[in-house]
Length: 324
Image (cartoon, rainbow, N blue to C red):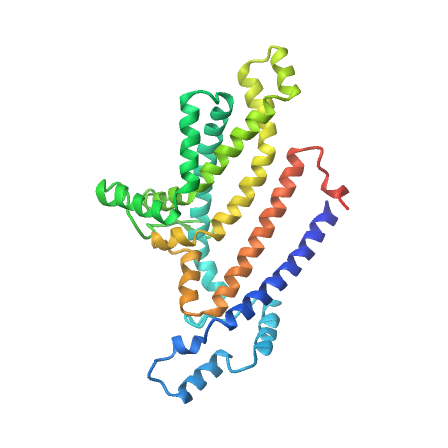
């Protein structure tokens, strides 16, 4: 197990290096940040002075080498816009994105597993057909459109929930979280529901497929033949086995929710990492964009590692330490 984890960490360094190379050189050809950050009426001398202050007067290879040296010490550059460490700016926004992502996944799992379980156990009932039709809608409807409809219905017409922004926060383990405050939770519900819709549909369909597949296997038939109560067959034998692929998918989808909350955060003006990176792209704030993408890649890899370890714990047939 230890060898496996160490090998994954080495792979992580390689992936981060390749990502930084692609992103850094990709942003270099997009545009010149000086043209955006400096007053349009500034002369060439002032632009050259600004470029030198930002380190943009050096060749791109030298800029990348300076970035790499800073990355090894945990410094991913200084934001052109904020004038502070890029990683510090991102970490300030991280709690808002993480709480939104975890709330969205909680909604998806809490609703998706029971609904998918019911749809798999009673596939011919009208309730199951309604659930599956709803899951198709969840896959099909664009996120930005659903977000606007949620704002129109629940914020504008009904007035039940606020439409944009982040509510009051409560400090928990050094993090400022709004979902632990009732008024803050109201602000988080609409964006979390919008973010959870696609994942909810995915979990419903995956759970239903696993239930239909596992119900035909011998161990379920044998459990029923022994006269075990239906609740025990479903809750112990069936549910335990369908959790194995579900854990994998839920872990991967958690990473995608964190990474791709950009649209939802933009629509609901949620002050998270997604909205920050969109603003940084428009302002050509390269250090923030590079630091954000590297952080997201690292989180994806970390979540994948945790999922693999959980998969090994749930399925005794999987032994990570024996993999070559």
